[in-house]
Length: 113
Ligand SMILES: [Zn+2]
Image 1 (cartoon, rainbow, N blue to C red):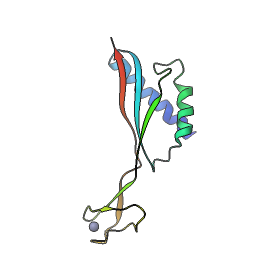
Image 2: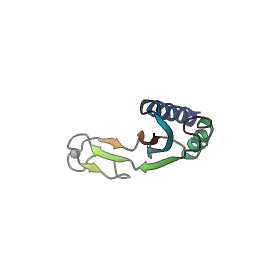
Image 3: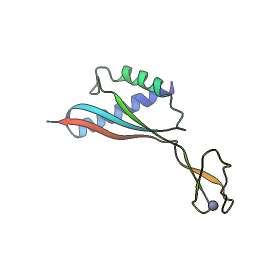
Image 4: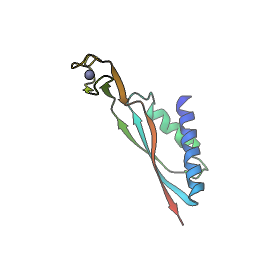
């Protein structure tokens, strides 16, 4: 399951950071997910609630922000509206995705003593 492996790698990153900063515990994780990342958020939260058990993230929920897909011309850099033809009206260049397929762990809140 795709979401399960994402949850495991999130936990691994959180554990590494917590160890690096000698944190007593992890308080929160902030995650950024693009709308085209292909992540099923409900499944990710279920997977997360399983992997976090008895770890430094036990009881910690994911705070998730979603980023919309954004397209831009590969020729002149003009932004291209989603849902329009995926080509630039100015120069005819091809549209390229500039954001919306990312999955980023933005922030880890920790309690350091
Ligand atoms: Zn263009």
